[in-house]
Image (cartoon, rainbow over all chains, first blue to last red; front, side):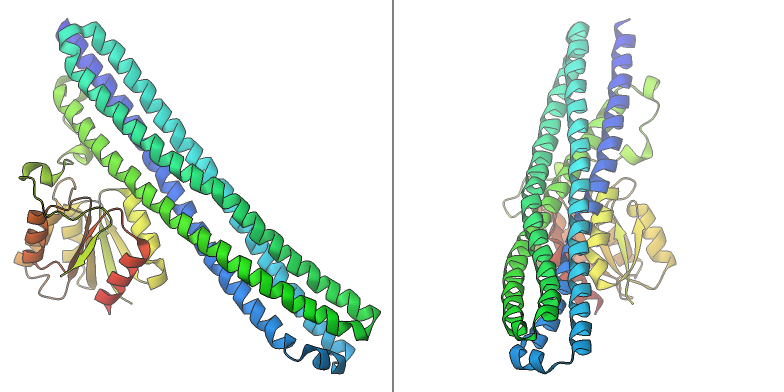
Length: 291
Length: 122
């Protein structure tokens, strides 16, 4: 009877851990892809911004004299080009913000997985308590799982925190780009009103462009830095998953009559260094050595 | 275009490495464990760089590197970079003795990995 209860519990725990692992893996996969998408879009945005400033900057040189000498048709064409470039930048900024929202959604689903794992630990402990002495190994497993799920939750909280911090930065960049777009429109209006105003508006356009570039560069550098930190946190989650897989293999091995043999994907997934004597000359996380 | 194989049992890690290498415009293939990596690199002589995890089912990364040293694939021009959570000196020494060109401990920095692979593939 006790033996049946023991193998039932092992089978239940292994099925639940596997479920948590699968959910966690698919969520982190999606999170990683979205974070890379943010980095790619931010880099694309920097390039667009820099090239548009090149267009505006070259047109701005000697702008007063140049603009006054421009024929209406040529000026209109120039303004149209500026409008297209700034409009494209604004649309890229919008897409970056949408992707950040996606990351926030996936981060939420990782949190749900961690909560699910914590509930599983809780239930395992109750069931193990009922088994008395036979349940002791499960108490240990439940404690380890609890530790792992806390680590997943902490790592995910960090990702959520970084993503939340990204939003105001992105909105600042977006406002700044939309402001530039608005100034370009002013340029057109002013041009139609009075040719003499062109010089002033052109000067203003240059100033706003310089401000946009400055704030855009700083904010985008910050965005790239924070995204890189999120990606590192994501890799830490994957390392935690590896420890969970090892735990799962242990549970499988304890109840072969119920769970069958350990599936191939969970065989030999321990840490090779577990079999070695500890060394003081180990490399630490993030370190690299080329031979 | 250099052909690269990522050997790692974690889909998340394979995806992250693949995304980190995107700017390098490489031809990238995946392997899900050491045995799969051995089969693929043996069947495809165009693969010139291998990014190799250590802790994997069926065959671990150290065993794979040693097998590739024994069968002459490393001598034929395959460069190996180990990318793993392990940092034990004995394992690093074994990989180095087998002919691996570098050792990176996870979590990795995407720009550093890209720079290392670009240098190796050049």
